[in-house]
Amino acid sequence: MKRGITDKIYGTLKYNKVITITGIRRCGKSYIVKQLVKSIIESGVAKKNTLVVNFEEPIFEGTDLKMLLKIYDSYIEIMDTEGNPYLFLDEIQEVDKWEKFVRSLNERKEANIVITGSSSKLMSAELATVLTGRQLTFEVFPLSFREFLMFKKIKADSDREMYLNAGKIKIYIWEYIKFGGFPEIVLIEDEEIKSRIVLEYYNTILSRDIISRYNVRSIDKIKSLAKYYVSNIASLIAYRRAEDFLKIPTETISRFSEHLQTANLFFFIDRFSFSLKEQERAPRKVYCIDNGFFTSIGFKFMENRGKLIENMVAVELKRRQASTPDIEIYYWQDYRQREIDFVVKSSRKVKQLIQVCYNAESHDIKERELKAFARASEELKCDDLLVITWDYEAEVVFKGKNVKFVPLWKWLLV
Image 1 (cartoon, rainbow, N blue to C red):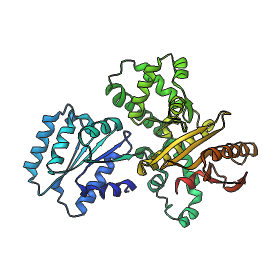
Image 2: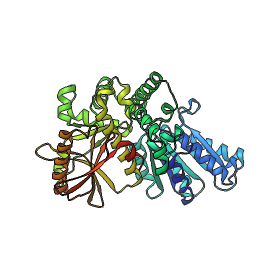
Image 3: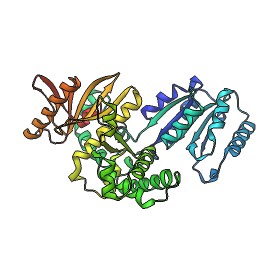
Image 4: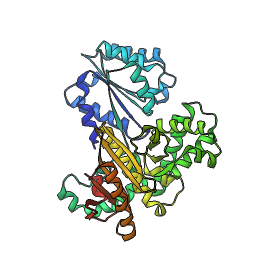
C-alpha cells in the first residue's frame, strides 16, 4: 500500500535537489524509500541505476566518509550505470561527514540523491550549513487515520464510503487512539504484542537516538524526564515545576527536552501571545508523537481518553503543518485560566480555534467550552470555531458566534 507522501516526494526527484526524509524511528521511512525505488523502475529507469544503502545494517557499522566514497565508486564501476543513478542513503546520520559526500555529488549533478534520518535537528542543522538551496525536506509521521484505515482495508476516500463504513471506522478509531499509527503495530492483532513492541521502540529511541548520540551521562535523569512528559501529555509544562518534581536542574531539563524533541519523541506548543517575550516565558504544552507510547508505558487507557484524543489532534495538526509550512500552532489562555487547546495561525492571521472535548454533550462542559470560545474569538478576531468531540455533532450559536461540533473520526478524514 502506497502512503500519500510517496507521490509528493516522487514528483520532486526531477529538480536536482537533495531530497531529505526525516521522522521518528520506525515510522516508515525505509518503506517509503522502497516505494520510491519501485516507482522509479516502473517509470523505465534501469534497476541497476538505483542504489539503496541502509547504514543501520551491521555490515555498515563504522562507515565514514572514505568508506562511503568507496561504496559509491564500487557501485558505479560494477553496475556500469547509465546516466545519473538514484542513490537512497537510509539513516545517513550514522555516517560521519556524510554531508560532504552528498554536497559534492549534488554540485557536480552526478546523481539523484535521497537521504533519510531519524533526527530532525541533525538533518536540518547540517543541511542548512552545507546544502543551502539544494535540498527539499519531507517529514514523515506514523500513519494518519486515513492511512491506518487503508492498512485495515477500509475505504474512506469519499462521503459515500465514509457513510457505508461508518460503523467499522468508529470501531477502528479506538484501536488507533489506543495503539497509535506505527505501521508494524497496525498490522499486529495481539494487543499484548503491540504494547511490547511499542515499548521496545520507546527504549530504542531513548538509548540510540538520544543517550548514545548525545553522550548523555545522566541516564536515569533523562529517562525520568521522558516518563514525566509521557505521563503528562496534553498538559502545561514549566521547567521550574519539573525541576521541583524531578530534582533535576532547569538547565539540564532544557537541554534534555531539546534532545527528546530532536529525536521526534515529543513536541511542544507555545502559548499564543502578541508579545514574544510573554510567549517565551509562558509554560508550553507537551505532546507525544504517537499515542501508543502513552498507553504502553503503564497508564490506564480508559481513564485518559480526553488526553489521548487531544494528543491525537495535536499530532494531526503537526502533520498538516508539515505539508503547509506557513501554518503555526499555539494554545491560548487568559488571566482567568480559560483555555483554547489549539490556535491555528497562518499569514499573520488566526485562522481557526479548536477545542477538544470528549464528552461535549454534557451541558456544563459545553457551556464552559463556549465561554472560552467567546472570549478567545473576541481577543484573537477569529470566527472559525471548532470543537472536536468523540461522537457529538452539531452547530450552535453562542453570543453571536457559530460553533461547530465535529466527531474526531470525521475531522481526521477531512
